[in-house]
Amino acid sequence: MKRRAPALAAALCLALAASGCATRSAAPVADSAAQPAAGAGAHTTTVTQLQKFMWFFSPYRPDIQQGNFVSQDMLDQLKEGMTRDQVRFVLGTPMLADLFHADRWDYPFRLAKGNGEITTATVVVYFKDEKVARWEGGNLPSEREYIERIAGPVLKFKKAEEKAASTSAAPGKAPLPAGSETSK
Image (cartoon, rainbow, N blue to C red; front, side, top):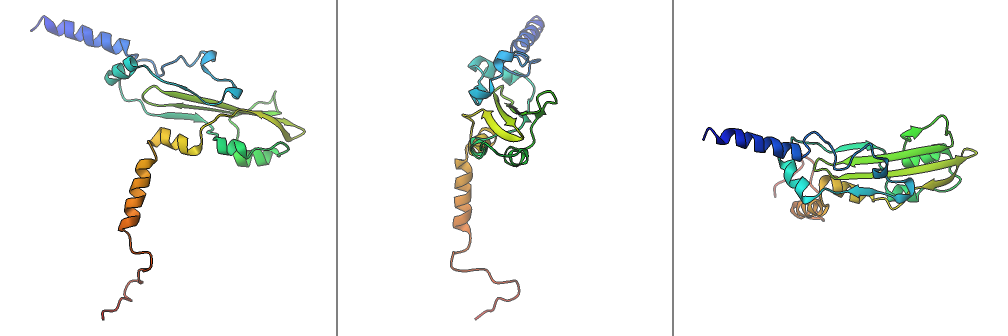
């Protein structure tokens, strides 16, 4: 029994080291090839079955969102000739507005889920004479798909809403104000 303890401890340490306990993501973040180009749209890196199994031994990792989420619905509202204020209203304040590239706004986005799945997207808007000349980006998820990725499938929420609606009061009867009910 005493001889097994060091071997068991060594095996556990080896499993934790192999699971990537010290690493945060499935792909190296510093690698520029892992970051998609603006025209490539959203890119998701998934983890292998071995990584999923080994992450059982690693500590809790929360979901981390960085940057501006730009949905396909928001990008569809973007039109050539819009002013900077109109673009800011539709897409939000840009994450990167470089002094040396004043006619370019970058909207990078990165969602690192606790299970190691990474989603990245980049939208770049180019201006000419203070108006939108063109933009790069597309093939982005809708807002509903993004919420499903974070909170789970929306079908569960629809069933809960339908159940709540069926247990509420009948559609033809409105509740009376408190104290005005009469007994007949």
